[in-house]
Length: 471
Ligand SMILES: Cc1cc2nc3c(=O)[nH]c(=O)nc-3n(C[C@H](O)[C@H](O)[C@H](O)COP(=O)(O)OP(=O)(O)OC[C@H]3O[C@@H](n4cnc5c(N)ncnc54)[C@H](O)[C@@H]3O)c2cc1C
Image (tube, rainbow, N blue to C red; front, side, top):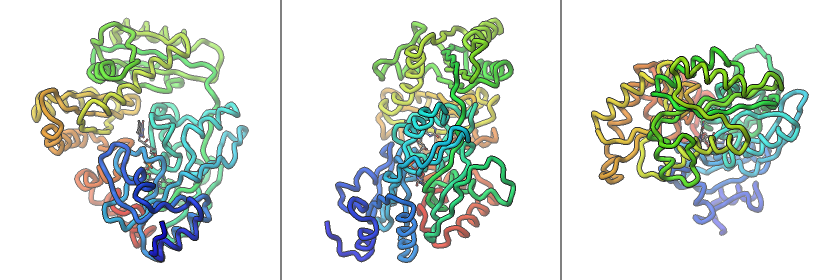
């Protein structure tokens, strides 16, 4: 396709063969978000191969005042990587920026380009007997640049922190096209404002992350995994406190699944095997790991579970005694997510409250939801060890999708108001993007919003970076 648009002609010349997609057909997959909630238009999709190309492209866009929507693996859940419907902005895909620049096992660090798929970074670390611990359901598709731009969480946060905690240095192209090489690997540096942190979780609104130096960790020599059933969410919270007190140094994951969320997974996702017979209770998937070869982590887990049972925190437990059984337990957790994708219309909330308040939050939120639409299927699950719950609501039988979704505003308002009462967050790990942007006006203080505006204006005065997202 040979567009006469002089801007497109210049981009084509800059990025060469395959660097500039222009037809509706080739652009389609970049213009729609993973959940299918947002669809936009773009002047073109740019696919640069180097930081120099990105810098030149961003300079050109600054000159021509063209907005840029950075895009990684496009697995984000709030429409942050989808352009608006104006068709005036470009999508800048990082997918060809996918080189591992260096791995240094003695320094416990790895330096990668932003378009590296998360699973590839994990594998590169594993090859030198190191662990890159960020792990989430989309790891085969999402990219490091997207993970850092959303400050992704996932299943190992209890032990290793969020994406932010895993960063040593960044390489950034700023909105005027200048490049900031901050790819340092030091672990201590108190020489001014922590500027790099501003770009983590910024959802592409302050600049393009082009590469990152990341922390690696020793590989766990032992791992022990159990699925336990609990009487209710309060028992799950009590169990977490008990585990933290006894085994805090080695808890890697602590995931909660409500009974209805597991039932839905069992009903809809083939291959989901529930090891306790009927699904009659909420459950927790707990995984321990550490580098020591002795004492046996499995013995410690068994002893702590026996003790937990005596104290009445758990009803039943199964410990995975081989890798296949461990994967089968994790398969249940994955199936819970999958089932909610295929199960019909749902209204999703990615909330956090203080860990010990999760059960109280659920009691109050459940009552509020039932008051608005009594039959709603309430299917919470999530990273209980981080106080982060995916408090998801699904269409009940007998109501069609449209009728159910008409209640979305009322249900979300009720849930997020309760989150505020608990001092929590209405978006714990997915960010604001387009979906949650306006919630910030309701739940963030005026001073906080004003500070964010000032930061945005000083980095991006023409508001060209990811227009209409976050702010
Ligand atoms: C099945 C599934 C499970 C998931 N589980 C989790 C989970 O457990 N925890 C969690 O936190 N999230 C989870 N997510 C959400 C999503 O995977 C994460 O937000 C992920 O970090 C997004 O990465 P991405 O490369 O797909 O980014 P994209 O979706 O492409 O982009 C996300 C945002 O980052 C910006 N961006 C992307 N790359 C760059 C860059 N190089 N420079 C500047 N800005 C950039 C985009 O403009 C956009 O605003 C899940 C998603 C799916 C589909």
